[in-house]
Amino acid sequence: MGTKQTAAVPEQPVANASPWLTGLMSRTVVLSLVLMAVTLGAILLALNAFTQYSLTVSQLAEHKTQELMTANLLRQQTESLVSSSALLLLANNHFQRREAMFEVADRAEWIDRLISQLAALRATHEQFEEIRNDRDRLVEKLARLDVLVQQRIDLRQQIERSDTPNQADLTQLADIETQLVAVIQNTRQVSSNLGVAAGYQVTVIRDEVGRTVADLNTHIASQATLLKAAAAAVFVSVLVL
Image (cartoon, rainbow, N blue to C red; front, side, top):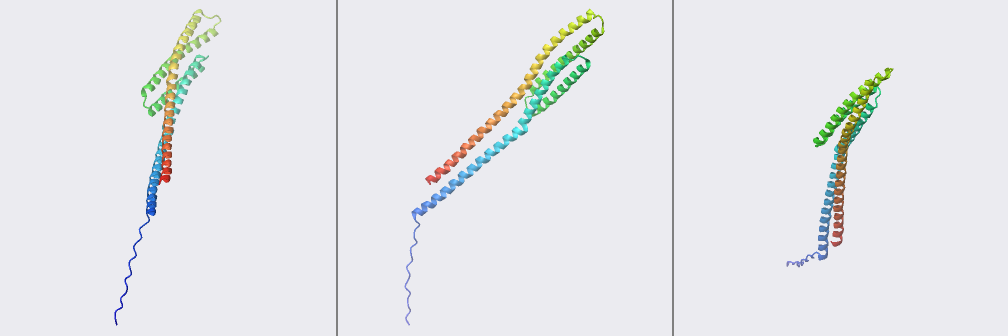
């Protein structure tokens, strides 16, 4: 029997991919990469803005707020110390005089504590030494005022008990009143310096808080601008690709 030969089947040529399809795939890949890059950049910008915001808020809450509260308390105590001088001057008996001097000692101690607390939070120790010096001068003036008020109370009581006032006592009382006027004038000057020094600390800290908030707002605005630019880049990429 003769061998039957099988006819060879011709190979079918592989069809080449369509150029249009290839271009579409390339654009899809490029667009995906662009979207991925822009999305990653937007996430990094948002994380950076959030981190900066968190750090600033933490600084304001833990440091600046405490500094501002301490400075306000310091100013209030200096005002109370000044008010104690008026109570001392108006004392009509030794009980009122001692009560006023107790207030003076208490306010002076509070001022020293607050100065130490504020100095620990801030680096401007020279300004706090100035406040301490003004406080010490004011306490010294008030101590002198206390002596004069004590003498005035004693003389007034002595004159009231006497049927006929002694001319020497009246002269001495007038001299004490003159000395009181001089001490009060000096006390007002020292009180004014102390109030200005304490108020200055409050103003400085408030300005620092304001600048910190302004810087934070500027940073957030710049990050928002970059995020908008990233969104615009994505939109343009979609249109072009």
